[in-house]
Structure formats: C-alpha cells, structure tokens
Image (cartoon, rainbow, N blue to C red; front, top):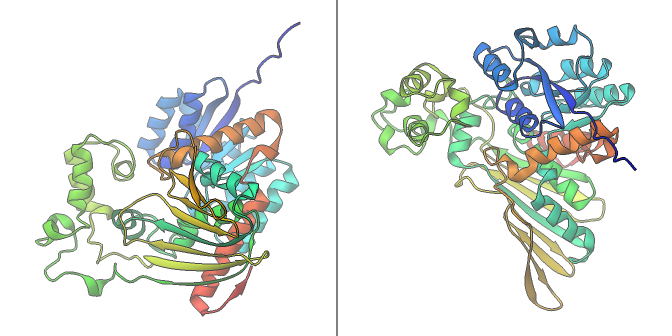
Length: 421
C-alpha cells in the first residue's frame, strides 16, 4: 500500500508588491511545499527588486507592468492582484481570460457595474476568485459564527458593531495617505469598512435588504487647524502639542526598530535620514488640517435583514486604535466580542460563558488580521490545488452582495434616504 503523493506546490504570480501583496506572498515563503511565487509585477523599482530577492526571482520574472506578465500567457496557476483600489478591473478581466485563479484584494471594485463585470468574468472563465475579506477567515469569526449558527442566542434580533479606526490610523491612511480622497481612491466605507459590512452578513448568514447611513468629515478640516500651525510637522511650532504629529508618530516607531507597516509605506530605507526626507517631501509629513482629504472620519450604517433583524455599524476615527467590538442580541442570549475574546450570556441560566478561541491575534493589518491573512491564503491555495472553490469563504457572489450593500449605504448617506440593496 502506497501513500498518496502530495499535491505539487501552487505557482503564483503577484501583481502589486506593496504591503498587501508582499504580505500575502510571504505565506508562500512560510509554506514552500504548498505555494511558490514565480513572477511579480510592481512599478516601483526598489519594491520590485526587494520582492524578487526575497522570492529568488530572476530579473525577467520581475517586471514593472502587469501587462508584460499577461502577454506571456498563463505562466502560473494563480495570480494575486494587489494593486490600488481603482486598478482592479482590467487585470482581473485579463488574467481570468487567461485561466488564472485569482486572489483579489478588497474592495473587488468601486462601482456596481465593475463588480458585476468581475463576477461575470470569473464565472465565464470557470476560475476560482477569492476576495480579500480576511475577517471571514479568523478563529474569532469562526467562534462567533458557530455561536450564532448553533441557536444558543435564539433568533438574532439586533447587532451593534464598532470599528474603532483610531486617531493615528485615520491620519496615516485616510488623511495623509492613499485612501484620503474619494476621487483618487474611494469612499471610507468601501476602502476600510467593506470588511465589516461583509463580516456582518457572513456571521448572520443573510444579506441586508435595506440600509440608511449618516456620516461626514468633521475634524480633519482646515477650519480646525490650530493657530500658528505650519503646512508640515517638521516646521510646526505647535507640533509638540499635536496628537497627529508625524515627527513623533513615525520617529518613535523608527526608534523602536520597526521595519513594517505603517513605516514601510513611507520608507524603503529605514534610517533617520530617509525618514527626514519622507516627512519633508512626501505626503506623510503634512499637517492633517492642510491635506486634500475628503473621506469621512465617522459614519453610521443601519441595516435591516430579511429575517427582521437589525444591525448598526459605527466607524469612527476618534478612538484609540483597537480591535472591532460586537454585541449580538438574541431571544435567548447575548454575545459580546472584542476581536480576541467572545462571551455568551444565557437568559435561562443567567450565567456568562467565555468561548475558547485558542490563540487569536489582533484583528488589524499589522497583526495579520487575527490570522485572517494566513487563513485566506491557506483557503485559496488549497482550493486551487484541490480544484475545490467551495473552500473559499469570500467568493464572487458573496463579495458582490457585500459591495452592493456598501454602495447602497453611500447612496443613502449622500441622499438622506433609505436604500434597498
């Protein structure tokens, strides 16, 4: 009797070697028998060279434009598309037509038409699509969903879910950074919180049918600029008293020896001199009250589900950065979760029980989203290797529904309406 031979390693091409693309590809380095990166497309030379060196790629396997990879036909089993949000549609259509299985960073696209075109393209090509809704893949999420599905709470009546973005994270990504401006990127709800809208429908096992929303940009505006503030933190007399000091935020991280996000967004060379240049010349050294940002810094979304259950989602910058917090209220019990811990209060016994999650890390990017980043890659690679797309929890149709909910919520916020999903 012979044992079954292990499946060969899935080969991967990577489009976009920023923090997300590099992070997903690192999973292949940690699991060499299961996945191997064979090519990368990244326009920034330093990032491209560093990525190629990490994965042992020859120079002809590291190109500046993803179109150069596509011209070579299907050179890998799958492709990780980790470009900026507005640059997802074209590579998905091209690589799907070539027969690549696709892992696509969230959001899948920014309009209903583009989302539907992506779904149609992958279904027509018969390839697996996994959208980067990493929160579906964590131990924490699995524990919460198991409680809801078990009936321990009875019928779910309502949900309160909070995303505490954090004051400095808002300043980094959504005031100074790539996702600060709706026209250049997308709405805050789509860029940051489509994770949460998707998570709620996954945990409850049903999509919303009606939504309303309220929110605005309240704080990070020119009229809130302190008297005497300069355009850049390095030149600012009030910087020592400002909680949004770029000098302090990034300088302290560098002094602690951090070489990962968020510093990796600013720096290729982790030296005080490189940081000084980045803060002097780049976008991350700007005063938070003198940027071209327009995305909201707080928003509430109210949802009604087909069962009659309701949910409220709150996103706010005015917090210490922390894990998401959730309360789920049922007819027989209440669940409380904070991203790392889950407890259930039983109405009959009037006792509270902690749910064992094992080891679950923080639910943010720096912490690998509580194991969600690795969980997504594990599910995607296994699905490709075994030709079983059902292993992917964030497939095209599920992701389309959550994106349509986000788009409806934004329509509601702008028009002051209740929108049908």
